[in-house]
Amino acid sequence: MNVTAADIFILLATGAVAGFTGGMLGLGGAFIMTPLQYFVYTNMGLSADVAIKTAFGTSLLVVLTIAISAAWRHHREQAVEWRVAVIMGGCGMIFALVGATLANHIPGAALKIVFGAIAIISSVRMFIATRELVEAEPGNKPFLWAAWAIPIGLFSGLLGVGGGVLLIPILVIVLKFKMHHAVANSLAIIIFTSIGGIIGYTINGIGVADRLSYSVGYINLTSWVLLAIPGAILAQVGAAATHRIPRKLLMYIFVIVLLYIGLRMIGIFEWLGWPL
Image 1 (tube, helix red, strand yellow):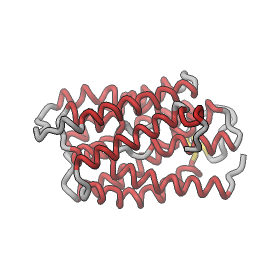
Image 2: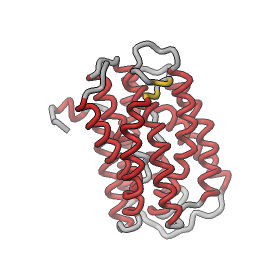
Image 3: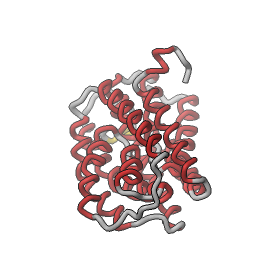
Image 4: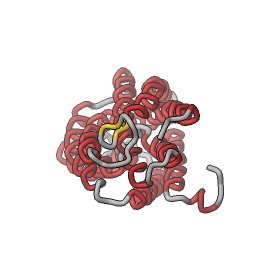
């Protein structure tokens, strides 16, 4: 199973788009990287189960790289509240490890459907929230932050994402963060949650047959390099763009991207025969 020039181009381009979009929307970029990695890996001959879990595990390591780059830029804009990030991220990291372990016992096809369904539900809820924008302050609620970090961490580890798809709606709708600050804090929290998932996918992928060369567990290092280098660079650009986009427009962009990825992952476009 060799990497072709076309595969390299796809991964480099995917990393660039994921970095920019992740840095701008606070998602980490896994929702873009995972479907395209899955496409590349299955074309290379990997089974669907190994391909999706390799995509999840590798995406988490790239997400960590993108999140560090983007969070640093948002920190320079004084948009990150590190106390929130450490509390939510620390709790989320523990449960991300649990989620990654559970994922090892769930069929890849089922994970794809769950991945897509949650993205669609979150996009609908965020669209509704655009009509409910408030100016309330998030307040000092460390126990509430920790409680919400549990499902976020589980989701992160289970589906190989940083957790931004749940984090942004929770930070905006439940915890009352303004959209720009939600994006910034989401990326800071993702630094921690992605680490838990990385550990889980590394341990649970050891000894699995038919993995790609240069893989550690379910994490492929070749793909990580190709995705992470452009991703980290473009994450800086995306994070800078966040603070120049009106809040409501930023939320609409988030909704559209999330809805598209969700529909793609559950196979709607393939079923309709649309090349999207």
